[in-house]
Length: 375
Image (cartoon, rainbow, N blue to C red; front, side, top):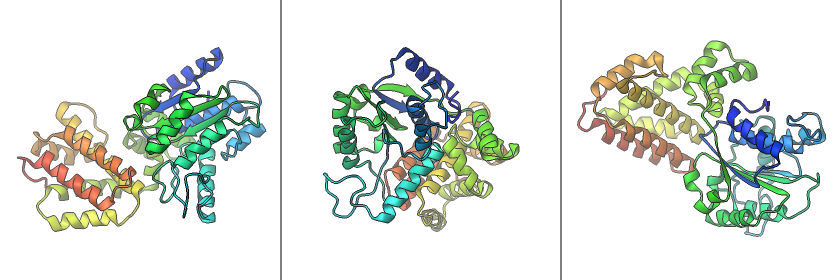
């Protein structure tokens, strides 16, 4: 059932039960870790609700399904962060003042998202969901539909709305049209206004299992079982994370993560600055975020070794055991929080060099005091 969405059977069952009883909410907040299928589920629900066949499974063949394959459906709107155009005013359409090249890139990214709901949309200079986009939602929500069914607005990473956009979407949530459904997705619900959260039905998504990810990698991406198993272990329950790891030189990246930790905890500041500059030179937030997620997974394994349990980086167990023997008193809770905070700063457009430098300081403070250096 709903084969485009990997796992999440509990959520599928809940939404199907609401469909069967005619009790779908007018506003949902899909909450869960990044890459677990929140957008995929929102798009699949829209696909089923608009499919001409009118069944619990979309047909993939009708005009509505075909249009959703490229996110070109007139009654299903997918809202993401966008760049600001030159001389853009609050009353301009969200794409109106952007260059033709920007518009083409945005449309290309949306087509990719329609074809693969686990595609991570990447648009340069797009750090906020603009007030213009949310005003367009409000305007469209009171207009008649072309299909005769309800309009569905999916606001991806809704935590990227600024104060003005948040207050505007709140008005739509307070005065919903009976032919409108809003689905907000987020991995950071604490960043949303409490009034927005209270007006949505919250649906919590679980991290994907290793088996879910491994099976999807083999069946969807044609990955061999050994590599799929390794990537599934390292993906931290995220299929988007798994896809990004496939694109990386995983072996070299994981070794470099350990080298960076050694450099941070060593006494050569020049080496540390050089390592940070090398990472920052990538100028690729997704690369650095992926790097930090692997670092967080490594430190999580260190915590597991100290407290008993199964680790993910089994081929790096020797390094992990050496680390835990030397830093048995390290505050790994603080370490993991520091890594998570650094990742969140990257997505808030923080200066990459400064984010990594601040992280290095926090790691040293949480691990080295009063422990010796890790060599």
